[in-house]
Length: 145
Image 1 (cartoon, rainbow, N blue to C red):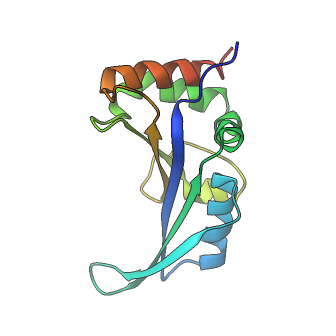
Image 2 (cartoon, rainbow, N blue to C red):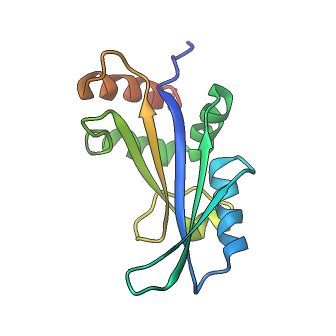
């Protein structure tokens, strides 16, 4: 059964600190997002230390489905179990992936603060959290069948 795509787009974001090799972080971002085009924005931290913000966006159904397909059953089950706290009142869905694991070629839900953050706009009308929860649950559960 074909489940309607639950998201308009996936927006990935991470930070490269001055102590990190920026190209390694870019590699982790490319692996995580599945796209080769990563934007870089120079910034500075609280204490004036240089930071590069890396961002990537995935828009196509095939690419969005490919990302969730790479997450694996254990991660999908965790997302379904914790879905209520992953969707806000604006119908955005959030998850955080371990940046170090991504560099090693693995998508693992983060337990620490060194992350690639994902924010996805849920595709629902009317835009209500309860409707978004149902749509995302249906979409994620399709990966468990």
